[in-house]
Image (cartoon, rainbow, N blue to C red; front, side, top):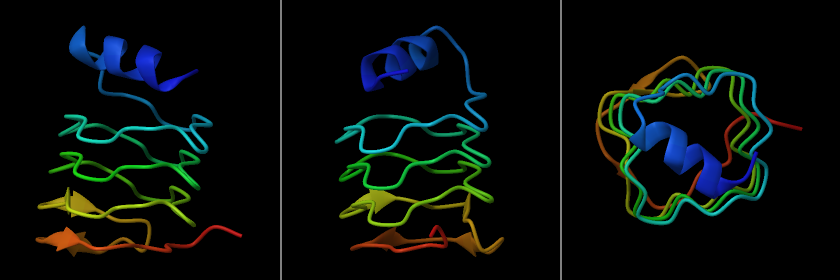
Length: 95
């Protein structure tokens, strides 16, 4: 699945993207609030300026992902913690 397909499905109302391989995809400035990325591989993805508020990123791989200015308010992160801020960068879990 590529970024355009994810964004199209999201626009059509889909929010469940669990266990997908979205490694290295570009989601700059994308609106993906309330999305479920549980267990999804987002390593190396560019999420700069994206809206991931209230997203579920539990068990997802964000290693090397760029999250500059990303809205993570209310997002559940891979470590199980909730965040209420914007991140400059992240390297969560992943190997």
